[in-house]
Length: 254
Image (cartoon, rainbow, N blue to C red; front, side):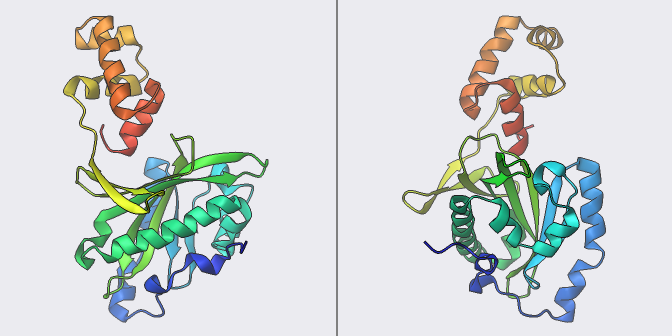
C-alpha cells in the first residue's frame, strides 16, 4: 500500500502557479480579518494557500495542535496530517480533495465562494489519543479562472462517531449535498426545519436552563417541553440536548 505524501493533497485541477497583480491584491490585510474573527468567535482555524501549497496561518488551540506550536504547523504544512492523522483517514482526506474539487468545478465561478464543505476525520494527539474532529472548508480567494487560491478552515470536535460525513452546502440554501462513500455519488436532501417551539427550547437550553425553567419561560408544562425535546432529538438524530445544540449551531438552525 502506498502511503500518502504531503504533495498528494494538491491536485492538478486546482494547481495555482502564479497570480496576476489583480488576483494578488485580493488578500491585502486579510489575515488581520481572520485573526479578528478568531478572537471574536473563539473558533480554531487555519488558512490554506494553494500557491505556496502550505498554510498561511494556524490558530493557537492546544487540542488541535497535537503538541505542536502554530509556527511548527505552518512550517510543516500538509506534513502535519501525515504525522497526526491515521493512514485510513489520510486516504479519506485525499478522497475528499478529489470529490470536493470535482464538485466545485461544476459550480459557476461567481458562486464558488458561497459553498462550504464539511467532514470528520481523526487526529492523533500528543498523548497518542485519537479524537474525531469536524472540519469546515470555505474558499476565500479565487484566481480569475476559478481555481481556489486561499481557503479558510475551521476545526471543532465532531458530534459524530465515525470519520467521513462529507457534506457541501451553499450559504442561505436549505439544500445539503451529501457524499455517499459506498456508491461514490452526491445525494441531496433538505436541511431540517425546526418549529418555533423547538427553536425556542434550543435557545433556552443553550443558556443552561433546565426543563422546568424552560417550561416557566414558555408558559407551558414541563411534559410539553419534554415532548418537543423528543421530537427535536428525532429530527436532528441525536440522543441528548447537548448534541442537539451542537448540531443545530453547526447547521445554523439557531
